[in-house]
Image (cartoon, rainbow over all chains, first blue to last red; front, side, top):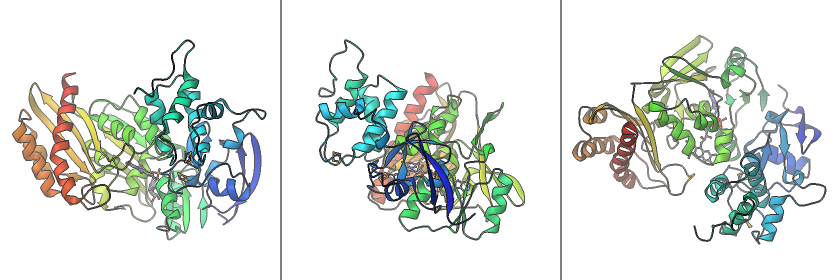
Length: 166
Length: 282
Ligand SMILES: Cc1cc2nc3c(=O)[nH]c(=O)nc-3n(C[C@H](O)[C@H](O)[C@H](O)COP(=O)(O)OP(=O)(O)OC[C@H]3O[C@@H](n4cnc5c(N)ncnc54)[C@H](O)[C@@H]3O)c2cc1C
Ligand code: FES
Ligand code: FES
């Protein structure tokens, strides 16, 4: 019941030992203590999704998650999605489709899309839009973002996404 | 701020009772957002994460018990919530965004008592009961009695919500939750939650609750009674809608003016009834 709590968190496969006040969020700890600034702070209210990380593979707002509650959970941030310096397929698809403008929302979107594709490797456009409901992008119209993600879920031989027509 | 992670309900109760200004921490979604906004600064957080009992879902002949720490996402996916209980499943499925549903809990939703959310009305329509544990033991009350005012429940110091009981209700009854929001994922401007049982073309049972239109979910026995025994014709539905709109005490906010909300109530009621009715015949 101390005010500062020693704690270890499993972040991108690495155990990090920390001491945190109980009111501090995972977002605070990532950005301020660990200097992992790929996770963005937008609203601090659960409304924008810029701070999205994966906890045990599922999208979670790091701005609303108190760090002390995450002991023993597997946390994935944007810093942990590449494989040996190669962009994650979601990141590559977003670049190839020109889906990124300022990029502020993208860490959250990449993680949300990654979780979706792991659960559902062939999502429909509707399912992609639904999953991205928690992520706000101020720059794009989402069309290219959805197209990029849909391109990864296409089965062999399937035609290009129908996003433009829908 | 102090923080504790009890492993049993009893331990949780004594922590809550011992510290003035202590609060439970469930999904943290609303609590942490309110702390960020400076609306709340609890002296102590009692995390409910490690109390296994609170995550249980159990079933018996009469209905289903949902532990307070069951997340909206789990409620939305539970196929045992059919028939009348579809009203609760549907509310959990539609509320907020996927990531909120992934974090927030049903116990947090009732304890928060935010009149603009979906679940309180759905639970009232489903005749849910809440189990509350406190220093004096446990009690089970109708969920309607839990909601006292905007963001206020009847929970006393040292008390916490342990689980909710959802009775299966009349055989053949169906539930439906209909929300109207400006954009999907936003808090509803108005929501209608209802449970309906038909015998042939005649309404045998109706229980309607309106959300976002007053300090607590609006449930009016007279409005239910206007529907029972009828064929749910236009006139009866309009009359029930009028009674609800009259009794509502909505506020003006960014999601709609009070007047607009009053206008929406009968329209949404009509739509919710016909959607529910389709299922009774389907
Ligand atoms: C951006 C956003 C959008 C949302 N949109 C909607 C929406 O459209 N519809 C909707 O219905 N809801 C919506 N919500 C609300 C969401 O459902 C709530 O956050 C949730 O109901 C609270 O659950 P929680 O588990 O996160 O509770 P917490 O935030 O942890 O707690 C909420 C309150 O309840 C108390 N508490 C929690 N559990 C218990 C317990 N077992 N016993 C006693 N007290 C307890 C806490 O002390 C606190 O005061 C939204 C929330 C956000 C942040
Ligand atoms: S910063 Fe977390 S949702 Fe906006
Ligand atoms: S690319 Fe700028 S906010 Fe999304």
